[in-house]
Image (cartoon, rainbow, N blue to C red; front, side, top):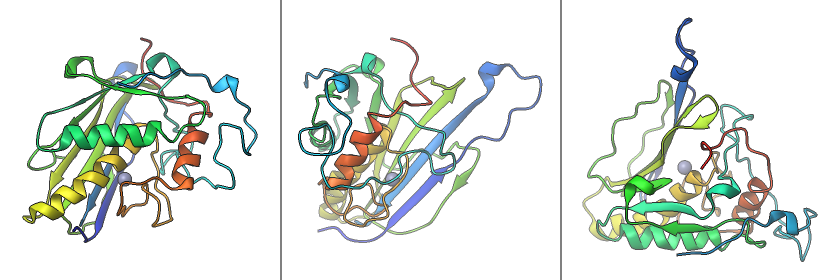
Length: 247
Ligand SMILES: [Zn+2]
């Protein structure tokens, strides 16, 4: 079993670049950190569905959403555009990482009601939009400003990306790492932390206040609630302010 605590570190924006630097150098790294004690075909067809909430639409009925913008910046909204669907994911072959990543992909793709989104596993990391790795320890945080809360748990995860001029300028990167010696607890922790981090990588940049939701700061299960599904549905029907470069 796995139990324990969650440690969330949310990176804010990099401090303003000194005057005179090139605009391309104005980048910021967004880091979302979590530690817990603990080939799909799709069509971007949102326009085919009504946006009204209710049965038969693209939205979970009788559900409420939690925020999906960056906590420090409500104008920072990211989602993968239709031109990137299916989003390409690489997971390094380490332990159950590939299986856990595939399960997470199926979980999130299954949340959509109108085929708005799809993901595809690739074996070449240089072609990937999202790269998932399982290092023995998380790489050092590089965000210029990090809000951290310490805790103890079986594993932890981090999702990070760089932006420059309002566009992603590198693949989204997800890491999961152990923080306990109990291999069963670590394995269980990886299952829902990987799914939680993939949620971040799809653009859910905030957390849910509801402990039942996968995107709560302390997820406990690899399951989506109605609120998780509704929030990702809303996000993929919202105009983003940040996106990847044209493909
Ligand atoms: Zn998180």
